[in-house]
Image 1 (cartoon, helix red, strand yellow):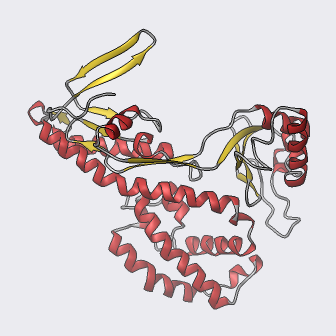
Image 2 (cartoon, one colour; image 1 turned 135 degrees about the vertical axis):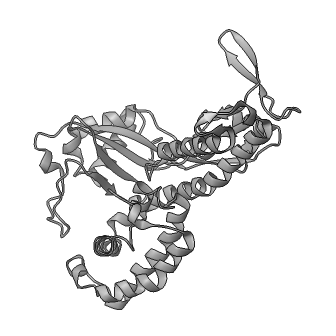
Image 3 (spheres, helix red, strand yellow; image 1 turned 90 degrees about the vertical axis):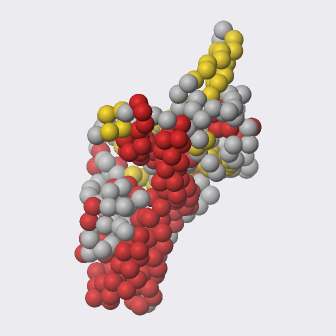
Length: 373
């Protein structure tokens, strides 16, 4: 119930609930609210009519399971026996896509892997049906053997996998979107407090750090001289300009990465098992390697961009054009197999890039040569 709606240009009365009772703090300075997806500051702003926000929870949740360090780490990868590529599994992202649900595993520093199940919270095949009861365990065992038989020995056997699924807590997956981040020079929301996202692009923490980078830059611009705070510039008007500039700079990218994280969930869950999608990603990889200054995958732009105006918002917009180019190359070739990716006409590819992609990069002011990984 903190009050951000009084007459002051800077500061607010903050209300805290503690084990010793309510605490009221008269903050005479700007409030930077980075208090997470359940932000009390955001709720207070919403109750005062100073912002609007949504909290969209997925009907799916997640549970973590541990893959012990394998005796033969190389054996954790793909052998290529199903027509795909052999792959050393020690350091990669492993995905078992099953449409309505999936399992993924990421390497830990000690050689083990953290696995995560994503599936419906309610329903016939859901976390709710896999209760820690004889009936729930039986359902879970049948489900694991039906859909994840390849993963069972990697987790330490069926009993280990079932025990972890029925006993480990279920995590929430959701997206927070906030219409207005700043109120005068009083308060600024940053990080998950205004743009929490699902974890499928691995960018939630990075996006929050980027908020702080822009805040630091803009505090320098509006309230400092040559990197030193100038108290005469620390006015309500300058703080208001600073906070408004942070919102203007960051909100389009925050909205974009929230969208892309949801899109990546569908990609990981459904599309990674699709033969055409796998070929398209190989074509994308070839273009990226042949024309690195002209074409970079959306993944590379999101994860390794930032400089050169390679923002989340611009990566999303440019990625639409890039996928159109991949579709055109697929159509021109009449469809190709994974083994035929090297037969794609690179002259035609460069022609499409020059005609469709470079003008868009110029319009957005992007320099893809700044992407390094």
